[in-house]
Image (cartoon, rainbow, N blue to C red; front, side, top):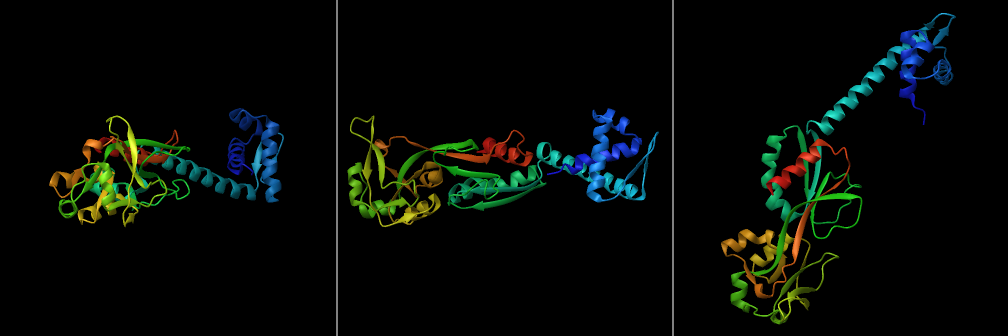
Length: 297
């Protein structure tokens, strides 16, 4: 593709200095190279822009028109780059597309939105809560907040928090069905599971030596798509669930959910990351949002 902005810059300088040689010295080009670039523009337009004399260059009427328009276009380009550069590297501003899982978004992101927007009022936050798998680049998402292991990709990530997995149930469910004392007792309980592709039909527990983890197959009559749904079903007394403790910490503190089988908990961790398309020139609004989450969460 032709570099028309570059050609315009050469033409404007030659027209203003009225000399190919003077323009060439400023641009570190030979006079013949400057002349060829101007001729290329004229050939493309089918119009003479400059009249060459032995001493100087003179603009034709078409050249005057082209010069005025070219100056405006080059000015617009410079102003656009200045605005984008300031917005990207200096002042957090502009649209910020964030996608978070439902449970994490409701508990951690939504309460922080007022404080973030108070700090950065020129940011326009576009927040979506969903537990579906998303294409960060394809869906033009600036920041995605997800838990679980990271896939190898060109995306970057910063850790927001980590939380131990825990098996929980409501006091009402345990009163009706009994409290399991050993992982083997789960065979008699309704265990609520996730329907993620990475989800498995077994839960890890410490073996008898208290050191190694072994998988115990579990069964139940519900599959769910999010930690928020699993938490609510457990609160409603439908069964036992295994989930990152950060989802249910307030419920445990309030006594509305109870951890079980803690003596057999292998201590595996659920990690939550802010995932983004990494770049050395990360926009200020994206960097500010990620830094804000890291500092506050």
